[in-house]
Length: 335
View 1 (cartoon, one colour):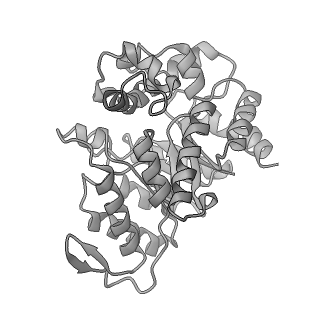
View 2: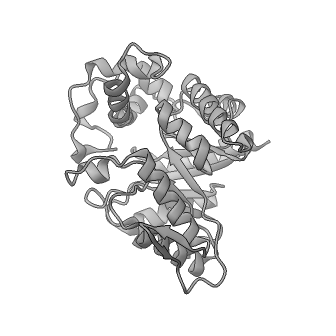
């Protein structure tokens, strides 16, 4: 199983690079960042440093979207990094949340997300693609790269889309019940499209904090319930809160007390917009407790189909968590 670390590109950028190096030294294989250009520094600039100062790390956004950059620009960015560093990039894609909403735009449709993924992946592979009715390719690519294109989603339409079109599925919470439900939906869609469902990577990404002070861990990670709540709010608004076939009760129940969300605190410990998130949701959606607790949850999620776990590292004990995973969790899960 692979392990990744997910960071925000807060200044200074050198800190992101430092944590990437530390993650690689502790057995992590992937380094991801958020991609919201107003809230944090531009990630693709920092990716070049992250790749230059590691040997094996695969680097990319968790997640980018079809709306803030021209798709040909994204393709050229990935292709340039691959040319410089030997094909060590990956693309997590979504419809767009904070990056678009912070500039007054709505998330793009699933159809646009799929279209962008095909254009970007094809261009990075050195192929000719149809881009809004124009046949284009990147002429300086002599031999293309297979850019893994993973997509994030929760709802039934998003899961079906991922199963039909994506190389990997990103679930942004570590709840076993929801993982089982979503993986089944993705795999069913893949089979319906004539794809081998086992070829779709399953990535669970959630905050993880190793230690024995559960109360402190909960307060540090409560922000995550608020971030996930944005997506769940959209689902409940579309399908209703009493439609378990479309929105599992585990996702819908805690949204009832949600009153709003302030993107200026997006993804940060102490976010005041997340007071509505109960302890039980923090415990279900995140990974808390001792190293032994983390090992047990990793094994449970792995049994349900997870083959990549990414740690959201937004809390006050980043180095210790990376070391605990490198020294205890990753060796135990890999054996």
